[in-house]
Amino acid sequence: MRVLITGASGLVGSSLILALNSGGHRVVRLVRSGMKAADAIPWNPAAAEIDSASLEGFDAVVHLAGENIAGARWTAEQKQKIRDSRVGPTRVLCESLARLHQPPRVLASASAIGYYGNRGDEWLDEESAPGAGFLPDVCREWEDATGPAAANGIRVIHFRIGLVLSRRGGALAKMLPPFRMGLGGVLGSGRQYMSWIRIDDLVGAIQHCLTSDGLSGPVLAVAPHPVTNREFTKTLGRVLSRPTLFPVPAFVLRMAFGELADALLLASARATPGRLLASGYRFLFPELEPALRHVLGK
Image 1: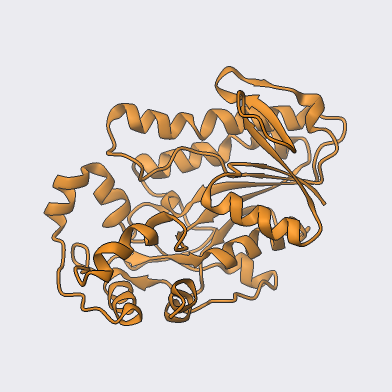
Image 2 (image 1 turned 90 degrees about the horizontal axis):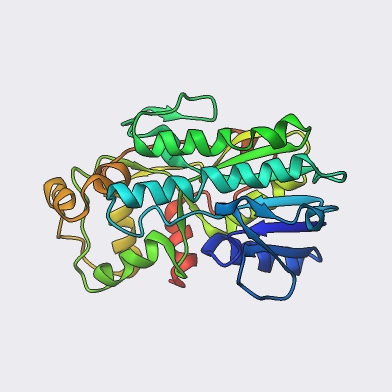
């Protein structure tokens, strides 16, 4: 296939490019104007500037670009950056794809498990209603922004991605230093569910969906066995052979991170990848401990 990717320099994008290249596919990156690179097409989503002619003839588009949700404390300005980096660029891209003479057959657009908000121990699937709050609102607007592509007959997939396990970046990479020093512990009550996925399975799931013509709409990109924060903490400590005796109370997290703490660190999402499993995708790492051992070489 000939595949166009946004967010190519990020954790997921860079891993996906390696996998696609090794599979014999040709990858072209859609990059911000001013960035010079081979096999890249420039665009300026903030100004709605994109050379539509350069988008002709791709078999698939994978849209992963967006401001890091956990990159900074959620001020009003930062929340606007998070929303603007997702909703506007997605609409610009999809409107451009919809106008093509040779549009792609499929668009896989990132979304997030934050779509569901804080749902306790409720089991969630692709049919579950969105939650309430900033992240659910952003995710809903983000997914809705793909409307022009879907209306033009492009098969659109919304990947609702959970906690991605990789030692090269993301949440796990930030957890490792304190855990390796024996300073890890549960967050808040520890009862909140964490829906996670190993980076290999996320890349595999994206490739699977690009070639599975029967899949469209929301697809939960999470492993089949979510765990509570307490289970995650104990498992990571066991894999690292370190104690996990230092819990972090919820009020401390709120003091340190503000609104972000309730939305990301203390929120509970217990999700199951129903559509991936029903379509025949087989997870390499369905259980947490083997996934962590593989990630960390333990």
